[in-house]
Image (cartoon, rainbow, N blue to C red):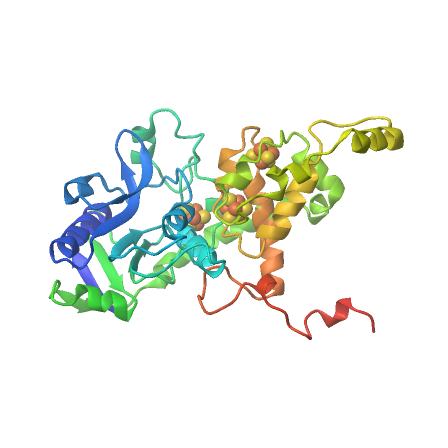
Length: 355
Ligand code: SF4
Ligand code: SF4
Ligand code: SF4
């Protein structure tokens, strides 16, 4: 594979490359994570602001795939824009494009091998210090510790981030990536993307995943288990709002149709003699599971925003693993693959029907 070597840290190497692409009019702007008193996603067309780029920082203030979908949903950009996203954010963006909520046109994708992000609760104080001292174990989102899809597959340019200090390799994955660098970079080398170096991280994550699934017994995913886990849910719907895959433009659970009148409450009281408030919390989570489990990318945004610390992302990732396995579907793996729920196969799951 062709690769570009830059003797700088990954963030500085990305900034240098993007500045050079901008000066050569190959791109007109950058969508990425920025830092200016706090971390945020932004689209920047003023080159002076590129120095605020911090694309590989271990922070996800919102899922970048969802943020980018908001900008491109109605129309794609009219000019080429470079986009730097973490692997799960990029996969979420691809899923949203399949759901016609994002547009890929005129976007050039850069991604990197991801060591995970710090939990938002972890970094609410001393953010700079915590980011500077981030390592693979302390304060990482549980979903990141479980994540086996941390190597990006569908970007035009990818960075392995394992070269050591001040050495960065940028691999060119697609023809579009190659076209982009034509006439800009003459120092390309041929090099293999050494995924073996990443296998120890993958093994460690698989072990953690296995242990977590053992603790989270399958019977906990039945109704009594879900009541146990989501019992303290205050029904704020923050998990759904932060989720890149919760794709309905108007959520049924936020609509007037979801409100129950006094007759419903009376019937419930007659039947049980008691009414729990807020009501309908388990129904909300089951509804969300049905909607998102085929495309859930395991980013952990939902856990991070939950005010009562329910491990929403861990539960959803577990359910998603089973659902996705049934269809051999990996969200965001391949743009040509349709989301299974959007297609119909005559001979699918015959064993579930009548003989
Ligand atoms: S879920 Fe995976 S890809 Fe996403 S931030 Fe965590 S480690 Fe990175
Ligand atoms: S359900 Fe949670 S883990 Fe899955 S995509 Fe949505 S926010 Fe991310
Ligand atoms: S964010 Fe937490 S409290 Fe709010 S609806 Fe989701 S699980 Fe319930």
